Amino acid sequence: LSKRVDTLEANSSKNNIAGRKLEDSPSPFTYDSGWWVADADMFRFPLGIVIGDRYDDCDYGEAVLAVGLLDENSGQGNCPSGDGSVAFGAANTASGKHSTVTGGSINHASGQDSSVSGGAYNAASGQDSAQVSVRL
Image 1 (cartoon, rainbow, N blue to C red):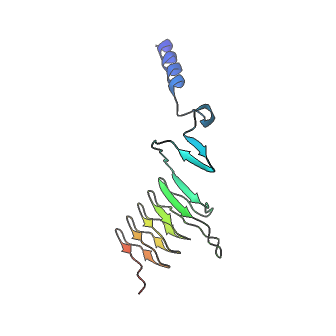
Image 2 (tube, rainbow, N blue to C red; image 1 turned 90 degrees about the vertical axis):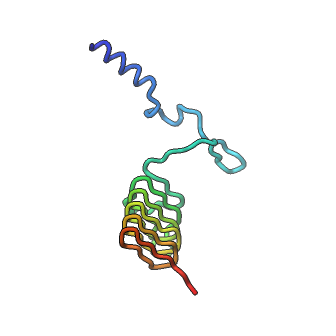
Image 3 (cartoon, rainbow, N blue to C red; image 1 turned 120 degrees about the vertical axis):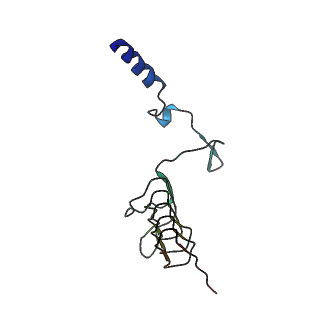
């Protein structure tokens, strides 16, 4: 039995690509006139993606997306801290599970499945709540 376990472990580590370093693999990107272009494949990011500035004061959730730069005045950035949440714009917070803030600034979506669509200083705090900013 011990010999069989050793054989299984050896085969497992030989075929394990999860521990492989990126430099050991062909790159899924090519460089074309100043742009890195991805292969026509699916990419999986279990923790999340930040496009722009990372906000150091954010406790990022899992499977999140943040797009934006740090605010010039306050230094705040977007913070998708709820699992499965999304924050676009400037200094927005999506802290509820599956919550979204899709634009504007200083908005907060704190309820589970809540959403703020933009504007400034808006909040969606109850579960399944939404705040749409309309300026007439």
